[in-house]
Length: 370
Ligand SMILES: Nc1ncnc2c1ncn2[C@@H]1O[C@H](COP(=O)(O)OP(=O)(O)O)[C@@H](O)[C@H]1O
Ligand SMILES: [Mg+2]
Image (tube, rainbow, N blue to C red; front, top):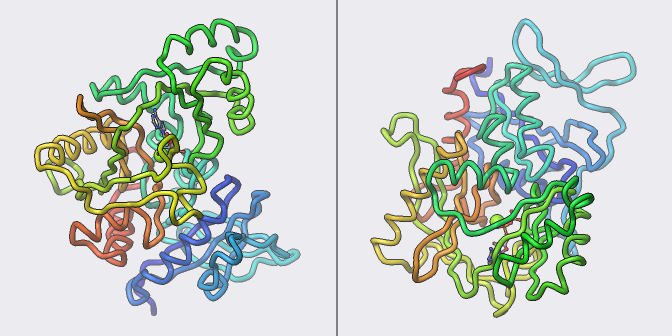
């Protein structure tokens, strides 16, 4: 009889970060303690179909010729069920269900919409299954750059000037939006409100570029956020881990820094995943103790500002005048070499320990309202 905790690793998904998610699954699978956890791979294809994926297939995921791996369209779909003994995942084979596994906890390694944004968390809540990371509200707020700023402002965190525009306002009141946006100082960052991995973000230096930037960003999300750009600011990041036994409710790692190579560049999709020379990651960052303490404190407040659970990576811009929160990610990049695990590694927690800690946190928390 197995006493091991049964973990569903969920990966792939319909967002543009599908391939990264597959790579993350391979990383986590390699690191997870197989004596403690019984792992089941559950992939979501780009078209949204679910499929059980054998562990040896997940282990084989890697970048080939610059192409990230992908969950293949299945011949047989996976289904989730809630029964007397809790939650199960199975494969539908014609009229039969085969390959049925009880699941104690879900670990969704999905980034972006339909995974990191509360939608999947809602499904877990409905099914009464425990899961790693933030709940519905925190996931949704952390995905939406507009509501995230509202939550940060309400918590008294420093937020840099920005303007939000819904699809409706952009369509029917475009001139008013443009006037409002042009009161910000250039350069500007035009961002899909519910994006990630820098996809669809456009940096512009003058008002003449605004219309084209709106069109480009709207290819990814009808709702946009316009932000005043920092020039020459440092980008510092902190990994925050839930800790219900600590009076603060969470702990902050050492700081990391992103140093983008190109002078007028930013930490874009290429630099994040494909261009090794695009950006350097320093972990730990070279910062004095006072700044480190200040940013750690802000990071923990940001964790609570969105009501996060489990983990967030909190990202800041820092100038001589101070620190401003950029965003939190409720499912940050999580391969072994990603910033979040690296910061914990530098803080004394290995990647396998971190994976175990997150699953144990999920197992320890009650289902339902908490
Ligand atoms: N207001 C800004 N000023 C300067 N650089 C920015 C600004 N906003 C974003 N960037 C750059 O763009 C990158 C991606 O933006 P971010 O808001 O973090 O989006 P994502 O959710 O896609 O990571 C940042 O890491 C940073 O390099
Ligand atoms: Mg970011």
